[in-house]
Image 1: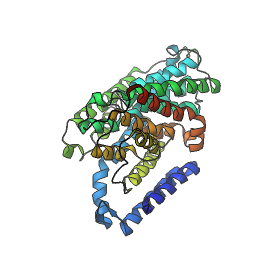
Image 2: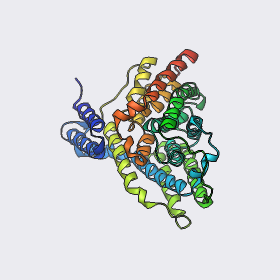
Image 3: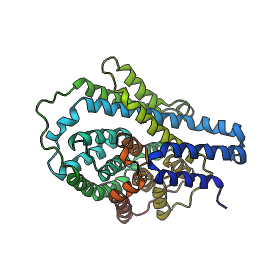
Image 4: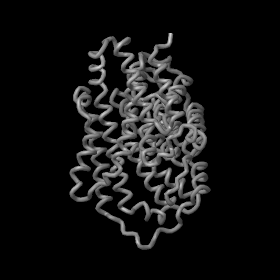
Length: 397
């Protein structure tokens, strides 16, 4: 018998897909409904009622706070980058025609191996707004998100899920081969996405001659990103009980931004949209965390492929935690599946939600799937090539 919580969650996702102009209201309604049902009729890992809810929130609040701070902080950071005028200068570096869009996607892919994928996606989306005259195709936005997620899938500092694997004892070398799939997927989706964009709004061939780049804002961007990476590395070396009691990475990003405010003031005007998008994602993440999923199917290539599809609508953090507890996965294949799978729908990853905060027109599941079809094809192609080249190599961590 399927638990009632899954029906509530499925109805919430369906509402988000159909009512894309009211996504926050739908997500909050779903969260309230699921919470009320579990408090009145269910339990939280065996703990009933409000007491169980309070224990559950104690377990989840650090993840939620980190996500909220990163989404809001990187929105402010993207505004710093845009106001520096550097994106308007970049046409000098990017090739003309569709190869310029392709190069931009490649840069996002590479950045995501070292930075948080939210930051890489936001930087790419900000550059795209400048070099394409403010008109960015939804298919290209989907590709930007996919590039950021693919780029981080084989690096233990490039994505939350791979970092979780690293902390649980999975060696970095055990996820590195995810790049066989990620590079394949990138080549599949990046070329048609770049051509889509070039037909929709060609890249600006020459920047304006009077552009004055604000170097101070670029320094702010660099300092915040460096602080985020340092905080991530520091948090990874803390014992679990310390790391799970404070949102170190998110607090660091917000703290450094505020510390540098007297030097360069952020564009506070982006906060309402960023906070709205953040609350939407947090509502879905918290709802997903309350689903009574206590085990996954046996680790096989087919079940791992399915986890990637599930990641488009179900938070990949609890999926990864369950997989680590279960063991016997091919960790590189799993990293690619859950890391890249969320790219197939706009709310399937935090990077997608962040980009949709800049481009509200992307908040349509139908349009995302219709114009971002190449991301779905890329996921399937990457997974297939990885299995054909390296096979299924499960290891007990």
